Image (cartoon, rainbow, N blue to C red; front, side, top):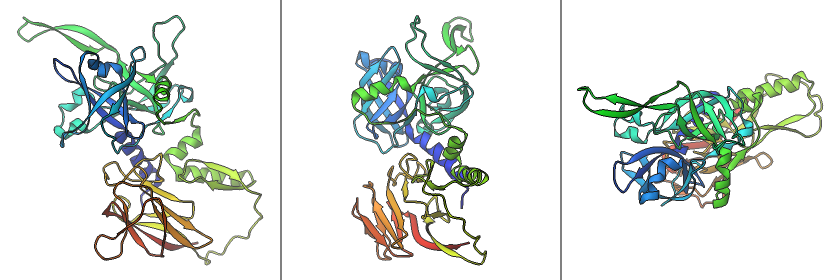
Length: 415
């Protein structure tokens, strides 16, 4: 079974990559320009910088590139923009099966907070094959300064100064915090225009060179949210700063839960803890528990589990006695997160439950694109009707979209 920290780190990386897309602006005349963006509005819209798509002001066209190998470019149009804050929201010609960004506000940030910038810097394209055109680049750093706009300045936006490497082509891409929430839109770095001579010393050209190391800026996500509100697009936003335990819960839920339990034990109890479905926090509730004798090590109990038969969780065992387990590709919607390359899996594909009072398992297709199938041993299995909970017998097997991603419900003994 993979460690919780490894599963979370992989899921976080997959989420950040899946949220980020390449944005192409095709001017009426001249060469196309490339930038970055990220998904909002349940896969129907993309956010980027206005300067990335400003060619549309002169009859240019915009597209989103998902898969360079398959030539999967999706046409888009600018639905709203704010030139002063260098923001634009694009409406896609068709919805894409990518997770939408989750946001955190300027008030949640402090100096030295870790950040990750994701995007498509142009200089990285020449270092790979065609497939590299649809593979984003991640760079890590910290927040150097938080820059609210002064009242007497022409600078209109809240800016976050970061040390993460930002280069031409990163513009419009997301800046993530340590929990995978978008805190800003990468916009610019410290560059200078320098005249240069050709090798023969005859022709003169102007090139942009780095004017300062580790100096990049992102427009805070707070500046974007009013645009999304105006367009009627739903989004999730946090206005609370992650504390030490909250951050640990986001990154290493198993370790965080252990620390909380140890802290409660050290303070003498005072109640029992219940984990929220989805593993996003802990809350205290219920009356104080009566002291119970320690069980004998020889006494064993049965607990319900979900076993991975094939796919990324093959060989893994996931407990079902801590609440329902949603399976999908979006960490915001699923507790058991599948990697982004599992394209047969929807953002929230299926829900597995266990009802202790009835000692029974349940399985629901959460309106997935490719379906949930009971494995009957005959053919491809029986497809479930979406939105209904089906009872599962002990040992029942099922797969999501493809037999290559299969699970089994079971009971296991533990002390």
